[in-house]
Length: 163
Image (cartoon, rainbow, N blue to C red):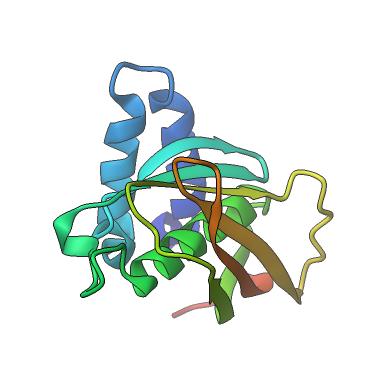
């Protein structure tokens, strides 16, 4: 049980070790895909994680496309959820967790090529034992917003009792 309680801490500690090494960010991104298998299907590249700030990149590939020849809506929602979750978790102390309880997304234009997601919560004071809406957006290579989203997170203490 202790290992599972510290997994987020270990993940961010691994980021701090790998981020400046050659291929370190890519290695971290692959490991994150193993830790979060569904999001791992995106093969997203984590570009930056700082307390409350995350930058994630998604490269269009055949397996992410829809019938319209653009990146599938759920892949875009997934990358936004991943960015918001990492940003939020990077600000929480180890005894807290965040659970996604809702998600609102708006698609503004077809997404093609390289998509960048940034979530900036550095200036946000996160209330504990509450629910919080986290805004996040995705931009294309020209900097145009293709998706806006709001992730609804419930923040609370981890269960420290017997399982």
